Image (cartoon, rainbow, N blue to C red; front, side, top):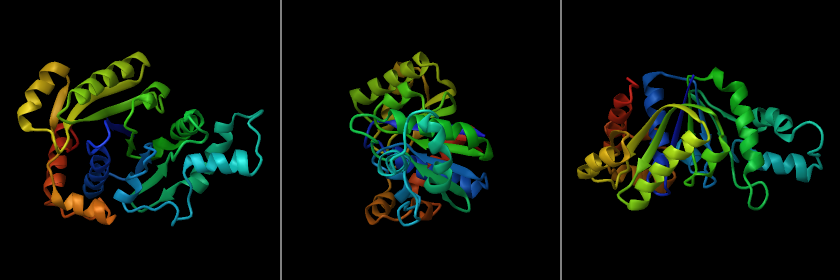
Length: 254
């Protein structure tokens, strides 16, 4: 099992990157996959053609509300993250032919993601060994790194855009990952669709991290996202998908 985490500032295209990475692994026959939407915006499901509500499933945050608020469950005694774990797999997971899907959802209580994150961490620790790859779409901020949804990661992909804030985001993300002792093999930079090729050398030199390439701008991707269509249905010759195949091959996923 390999665990791949995609991070980046909002609007860099990280969710579409995860969706097209999913398409790549499916077409390569590297399944089963587990997709984890840890972003409260919850866009990954739509981009891979999964509607949890239509499937009769709930996000982790919804399960916590149902278990401990609506049904009067207590948080005293057995840790709530342990009691919610089996409910995540039973009532929160979409199971497909090539991939399973689970979403963190919005905040359980105002201002805090601590319990949903802890529940997700416990669930990931118990069953991820059943998958070839676990792909995590992270929220735009860096708080999730501090909370360490997982302590062992194979590859981190940070999507960069042409802004000073994005460069600083990557510097902070790398530093935080080291400080909280996340054990990762590789920390990669991927150029978002707005990132110009002429900045790649600056990214390599200033950030001192491996730059894998950039995601191509693709009107077809924009059309699919606007229409709510799954990016898994994109034609294999779409510019964005071709560029992501190249990026993943540069990372050793051949």
